[in-house]
Image (spheres, one colour):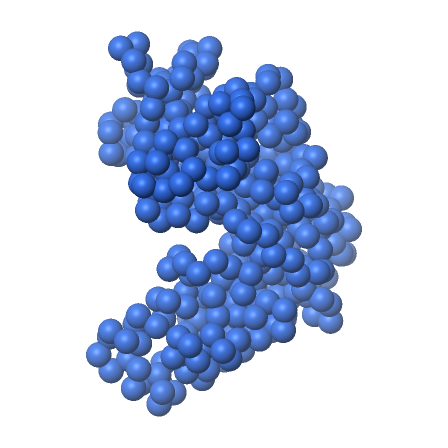
Length: 380
């Protein structure tokens, strides 16, 4: 599947429903229940059709799809006791998914493209060449790198199908997903009342010359890539009498960049060495965040002029299919950034401090020090 065994994905949830909801398994075995990700539900409802369809980038997120054979994996379905009849048909990402039903949406229009969330952002960022990467900063952060047409596995990362166009091999991507990015700022606002709005954060952190040793490990729901540990919990370290709310905000913003660095290091260990990073998502409006990210990664960071890269990506694929955009090359040539940042400060010691804080979070959970932390023990 290219994924790690985790309840984050669909397969275990489907099994739980079948095992625990009265009558669910009986109805599934009778062909009265269907399973799909949100795209298949939307397509069926928008088109008023009984066609049950999805495409590879969405199917690859279920923990039930064989990303090499491009079909539902019979062994996994059998092990999880999920009837194959529940599964949608998998068609290319730019297939004909039907026509919207006028009685439902008020007009008729062809549905020409379908992509998963982060895969659509990779497409929208025009990362069509092997090694190109983008990071979306939302509730979590999602770093995806195009690895071409050959399937590869990398410990700590997910291997996902980015897209598969009609008559072509699938394009694969490495993905590193962190669970808490912008959600850390939301927690400071809603949980602690430290800020009233995320708009305040840039000015608050700019008032500090450094983090003054304050680090926040935002393992509020465990840790995602590259650690995949649901037992580790959040910690804030380095507090003194001089610590104020600005330090908490800065630690939260810095934690986003350090987590992306953890993923980027893992990608580098597996042959993908980032030379630049295209970014999008609501948090990228924060210039401090982007400059710090550039410093930590030691690469050029480019913010797309279209921050909603997910919506743009699937719209662009539909545009190509409809003949409104000539081809991938034309789309790549039209990509623009509205802010470009280059490294200005050496953040090696800052990152070493993060790894030390991260190791402390693992120790507090009774876990061994991660290898990635051990590798910088000399710096720490």
